[in-house]
Amino acid sequence: LSIEIFEHAQTIQVLAAENYFVEKFEDYQNAVKSQEIKTAFYRALQFALTQSYVYFSNMATYGFGALMIYFGHVQAQDAVVASTSASLAGWAVILASEAFGDFARSHVAAKALYKLIDCLKEHEEGMRQTINGSIKVEKVNFCYPSRPEVKVARNLNLIARSGEMIALVGASGCGKSTVVQLLERFYTPNSGTIKVDDYDIQKINLAHLRNNIGLVGQEPVLFRGTILENITLGMTGVPIEDVREICRKANAASFIEGFPEGYETDVGEKGSNLSGGQKQRIAIARALIRKPKILLLDEATSALDTESEKIIQSALNEISHGRTTISIAHRLSTIRDADRIYYVENGSVVEYGTHEELIEADGKYAALVKAQTLSKNE
Image (cartoon, rainbow, N blue to C red; front, side):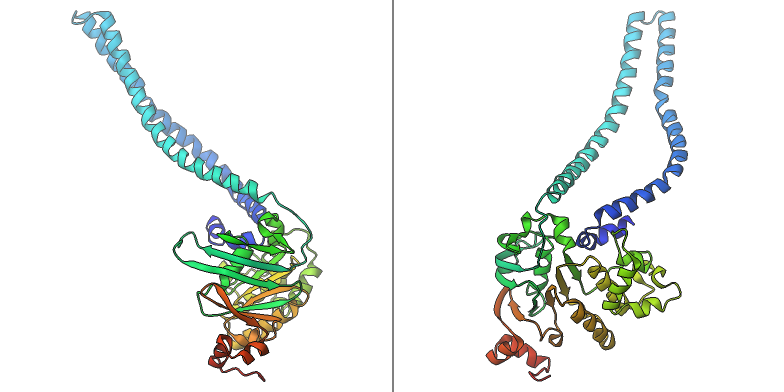
């Protein structure tokens, strides 16, 4: 479980399910506590034996000192001083060698821990206003911390009004997915602002913001458990009727209810018991169950076969109604009905408009359409 948590930390953050996984991890810890109590006795016995040699050393030094005094080779006070000094020196070396290692490890661990605690305190702060879903990105510049020399967003500007669908297109690595990363607050822009309903997202409570944003990515992430658990991840008290309705909208109800165990079907390790299209539809249902005001589609159909793509795209078209939707796609047929299409190049918007407007302008978007053998009347 801990490996899954670290591997899929962003998915957990998107779902604001940190507390759910904390409780689940505590359950795993409690399960092994009884075994740890048993082994603690043997570890304590081993510790006692390894530490007792100092006392045997005392017995030997004092015994030898007594013999030296008896035969007149040393004075009594000298023998006592020598034996006591040897004993104290032994204890000092033992305790110091253990303490130095513990101190070094605890210093590093405490530093990381307090950094995390300070971060959690910051996340608990912020506004919790009602979110309608309008988005405004203004003059955003950004570099990933691991690559500070590469600017992936350069004076980036875009607008999505509440309920609108906008699309981001462009070559791979041009900065499209960076918009998703910044909206989810996985990173903070180096300069510029990102606003939701005219509020800077840095001032909005993080969990509140993420609960109002649904993200469907290219590679769906499922955790070991049932289909129902994966859909309601981190949520409690969700009526099964609501889950069924959401799955119907996501075109997932038919295949789920076709399983003998229905919604209690085990998905397997990382969803290994399901096909790619089935996993993607469950991911869509999971995003919808929180009733988000903003929907982010990051190449949600690019890894699917043609038949699965049609099913998923049909579901995405339905669920995007009434929600502010930002769609990132390489297959332009999936976004030609967007209210606005932004062509991104080297981290900047170079042209935008509707599909028809951009085709008429005969710019870079039109060239991309031609490259994919699309036409205005398709």
